[in-house]
Length: 278
Image: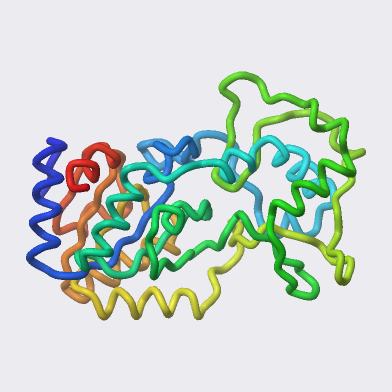
């Protein structure tokens, strides 16, 4: 069943939650666009710009790391200062009411936690934390940001063009020669520092996947919000719900990889649809 009226979609969603009890929620970039964080893909699932940083490229190329950290001086603050929108707040409210259980998110912005949700599985990690790829030490991303500014004060004057592309991982569309950019190393061992996120080409930690699968298995169904499910790391949960005969609700304006599996398809704006149920 497909619903395209926003109020009807909201009412049907709340009705389903009250009938089925706690359901698991999977969120993607579409839930955070109303917080000013753009999505990677358009409504057809195609890249809006060039594909994001690949894990292998980041690890083996010093030039790629220089480009990323120089550009993230302007891109990452957009994530850091973003505020939860009505969709995040509604999910936190529903979680406190017992209508939903675990929130599995493909996002790395931490907005579910800032909205007051607990029991959140950050499937792809946390962009506001750093991890050393040699010793595993974890530190706040803000420290790395401040170290980059201190080592490269001339880059603080670089201003992105109006309406420039900022990406969900903190990258920004700045072009130029970044070969003089000094990238700070781990203060403990001198290793490569990387945002504590799963880059494209890397694997989601197995224990994280298993925790999410268990949460879905022990709930009464799955609601997918703001994800095209193109990436298998999210699609696997839609497939799991379908194979288990659980209700599968998709809330996304654009097409998704699981459209043919859905019990209920809501093609309505996310913030407005969830806002009615706040």
